[in-house]
Image (tube, rainbow, N blue to C red; front, side):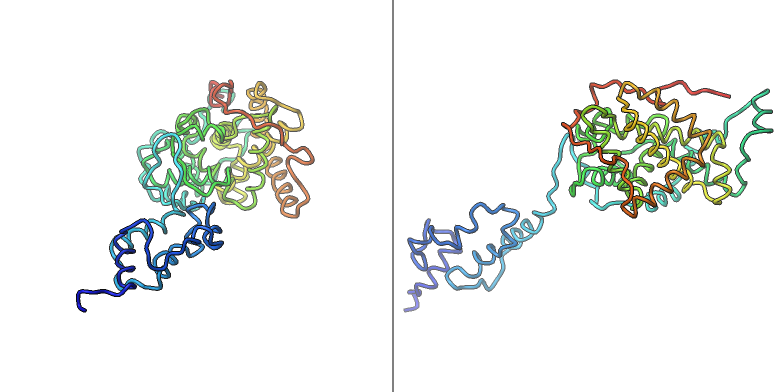
Amino acid sequence: MSHMSSPRARSKEEFRDGQGERMSAGYSSSYDNDKSVLAFRGIPISELKNHGILQALTTEANEWEPRVVSAEVVRAQEEWEAVDTIQPETGSQANSEQPGQLISFSEALQYFQTVDLSSFKKRIQPTIRRTGLAALRHYLFGPPKLHQGLREERDLVLTIAQCGLDSQDPVHGRVLQTIYKKLTGSKFDCALHGDHWEDLGFQGANPATDLRGAGFLALLHLLYLVMDSKTLLMAQEIFRLSRHHIQQFPFCLMSVNITHIAIQALREECLSRECNRQQKVIPVVNSFYAATFLHLAHVWRTQRKTISDSSFVLKDLEVLAKKSPRRLLKTLELYLARVSKGQASLLGAQRCCGPEAPPFKDLTFTGKSDLQPHSS
């Protein structure tokens, strides 16, 4: 009697050891036609765990429950739990250090406030050097000088503009990932190098190559635009406009050029009066960047500009922005107030719903950072 085992025990043993294609105990020829089983056919594998099918296979089959959970079962459970966190990769290999969390503008700024930037700070020229009549005219009729207590904050802005993109730095990677997710609506991380960056308006697979003249400040400005609840809708509308089948333009590259205009306006003290009034530099520069981008988008849409007009539009935009920064800031303020009430839209009745524009690798784009800087 001790050498014989019950049918239930044999079934349990066969189930565990995987012996036989079909177990004699508890198996019915109508199993394949069972409606509860058919219901699970066609369900994506990532969704099976939500229907309890794993528990049914391991605990309800043949009405027995395993006393000890083997290492294989634990490992399988962990793999199932990881299904939702699998992230697609395109282009080059994704950075394994990315935590997958969005990063706010304030967190990214705090990082630059605490890291050692002394080697980059040596390169900055806080103000434009003027000589002769230009210096006299600026002294007599130019904007006021920036208050002494605000100059350290100004220098931080200019120092960040000297920093490049380091794909090995987790914070740098999170900034890129956040910009990508907020503009595309993706919930997954992406590779830091790859053709998908051309869809956002970079000219190549590596965003670092397009930051000339603006450095990492260009990415911080994009981060500010997409992470501030007041400007996110504006950013998404400009992004939609940039993908218009006729009026397309490289969104991120255009943004880099606007950051370059903001840097020049700060160095030429065009923003000093507003900075002194608000007793802040970084918020003023951010708002000036957003206001300038808004004005460009308005001109681009209403005047039906195309990529061939880019250099002329940017030249005119720089002149206007430096001459009337307060006017641009006021326009932004009124626009955002109306957007918050649902009373304004940058694109208005015109919806950019034509065929999606191709990547910008085959388009010629001349921006401010490609032009020779002028000196007073």
